[in-house]
Image 1 (tube, each protein chain N blue to C red):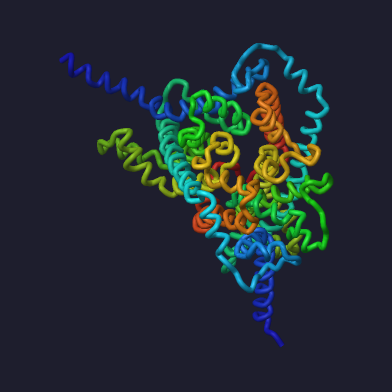
Image 2: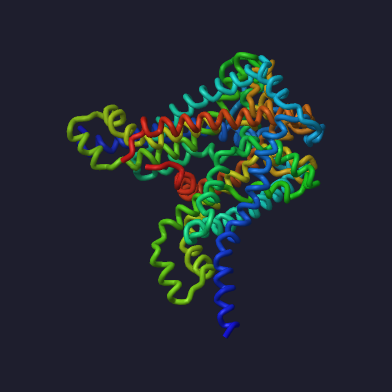
Length: 296
Length: 278
């Protein structure tokens, strides 16, 4: 009797534990590689560290004060924001044109659709190898085409644009795909009735396609800002933050402080600052979303 | 005189041609990489550069394979991709299944934690993770390369969105036929979600294969480098000419381009599912 009663009970117990067991592996990894390092980064931003990045001594807000009062830090933040703005505007413009061109599915439209998105699949390091060849001063491709002799990546006015150009090229694909999906979701009959009412292509784009796809457009804008903040490889591979720090962004500064200079506490302050910056833009996104975006 | 139909045909033909030409201009850096990777070093230093050469050579490819362990780099990348993708699919399926089909205490809070991970970019914690891996003595190991990529909030979210679309009756019917919870997951939910899993896998492949920051930090031994890191070190080497660098770059690009071209519908689905409301 008692054994018969016991069995369903342990079974029920097991069933109650099951969902936790299913979540456990994912949670363990999150704790180890997201939550723990995040909290540790916050804590270390109030401490001193040794050369290998481990805690030595609490110093309160000293690190924060030291970094936030430095002009060089704010100029890095300024460059980060400037690059994000340039990347955002150019990426959006090109991706928008590509998406409008590719919205209508015709025979073989896959051909150009594939090309417009292709750089998305290209890694930054081989791409950088090609762009270094394009930008190099001695018989570089760009100098060949323009008949110039400019060292694009080591001169101050051009370096930032050269880095942005590569980033934009690499980011257009993802934006294009999101916009394309949005534009293709616009109901066909809506466009047709507008056409019957005499709306030209530009009017249809302005008054129907763009408003109807506003969730995607909105999403892509903020996605581009965030991915620009996180762009590291291009800067590491093309300019190392130079010339004269003119392409040094926050993420590169973090890398430089931690890995090259062994100043982990400085890197931690900057990493948390980067987090707050991205977080701020996410908040703005959520706050604006309900006001700007049109949901069907 | 052209008929209206012919006119229309010409018009759509021109618009198609314009769109394709735009596409070719857009991917021209890739064409540049390919075109100059088959030219001799002498051609690359001669002014003006010629996109098409009369005597293409595969010498650069032969030499880059001889000079650097490109195959080892590729092998490392494949190993990392395989285990990271497998891990993400298994762990995210399990977790998503629990969130969709079970009611349990703290479910909401635990799911919030998953969403919070999506608010913390990997770039913010990358330095501290590097210190962790270093303290564990895992620098230059596959474990170091794979561990942080074994799970992501995005993949759990994606699998959850899919399970939510499965009719509840399926589970009830299966339970009545004596199918247990795990049996339902492995025998019914997982086979049904193959398209979603494929999208996730292709999307993750392109993402993980192309990783740069993390593998740069946790490897410093040449034989442990992934292809992306290996290629990035070519440009700083003195013994490697530019044609050879471009050949190496082309080799690194080929796998992800092939996967992209054949899997693009899956990638698009994986990217956009759950990405935006509306």
